[in-house]
Length: 481
Image (cartoon, rainbow, N blue to C red; front, side, top):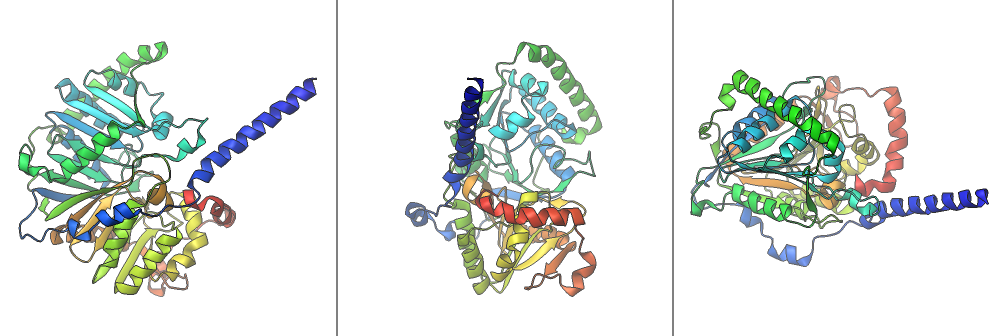
């Protein structure tokens, strides 16, 4: 009888495991294409402003990790009415203390704070931290998770919110690829750091009704739709008894940290900072995004990038951490290479890349990528590069959260800013070319160009053996990488 029960228990567990695996994989197996309604509504001319006048928005590239942290702290201190922080991942650490002690100070001033975090990573990295319960208990701070995975609905595991932006009133927007912890922000741990990139938007017409064309307003409308969607729920409002005991100390530590921060960096905590000198004029900034539901998505961002690439007259330069393509993406890359004289892409080499699955896929599909005709540069700097940017001719630039991979194209929510302006394009180009100095050019046959051989980095024998296995194994779920 006991053996009979044990046999049935194993059977039930096996059936449940099969259900979970199939529920994770099957709904996303067939990448979607953009629907007719989206195609009909799309026009690349909408990204341009040929009126001869500049936009109300001004912009600047935020490149270094230290500048990225400082800009965030400074922006928070400009808030008079509201702060919106939407991010894929928050983790406790020194940069986190800098940012959230500043947010707590703003909330004490009566600023309304809304924080939206991906549900999977929020659950993993925030649920056991008293600091977030202390913040969630503040009357002017609300924290929500987007799509907390439900093990009984395994398809919810993949519906991730990958957006990363900070909004201040109707005045400031920071958007890019950085998550909110020490790996991306500040220089608290120089041995474990990732290079990334943001774009700062300053709406010079803030407070005026006719400035609602600003990217700040566009992003705020997008955020409101996300915040009020069925996939988002408020968290940290019902702490356990043990957590309640920890919250007062966590709040006290945040307040003490703020006093240290303001004493150490008073230039970051002053209100009414003038962003005119630290930004440059642009002609137009436009937000683009993916569908915001949790299932497989129409590739709205990729479609718009592809259309912009194909109409380029002189050059396209893609900067992405990873390159994992569907057949439609291979076709789009090949079509661009066939019509654009100068078509380049810079990605991490497998020696420095921090995404093992993406590196494995690149090893397997490298020749297919090269066969599209794009000139590939593999970045070999001292740290992995996490930036997601694009140059089209000399007047269109893109910066945001979108990686050139299957997840960002068909699975995750993503946001990008398309910026029209020659001066901004030149500024972004200078940062990309600075990284290219540490990259090696790959010949069409997959070898490193002779002139760059000295910059190539070797992969350890152990890692090579792992890649030999995983590069093949991961093709079973290539569409989720």
